[in-house]
Image 1 (spheres, rainbow, N blue to C red):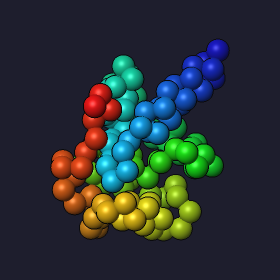
Image 2: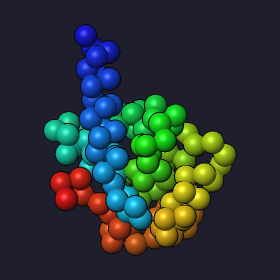
Image 3: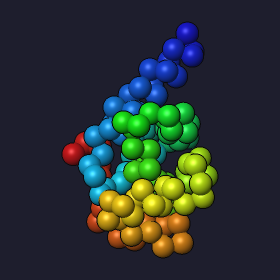
Image 4: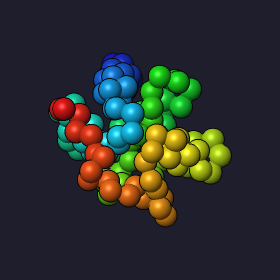
Length: 109
């Protein structure tokens, strides 16, 4: 039963992540809070790690609460996450998103 709960949670995370607009980012914690599981930011991260084979889940748009690319090591190649963000016009310096507050997307939008 516990495994089904995780699968269900991951699917709910993917639904939210699919809605992040091009050129915008959100955080693990914002997704967790939106889903009513405010203390589950780490589980959102696990869902992102498990999503890399799903082309329709833009996991690169999910970062930590400070705008750091903490999930970048789970992408193929060292800079793929940064490259994907930069392809959308998002500036990244030292693994951190520039103007993070300005491009932050709140899931309740």
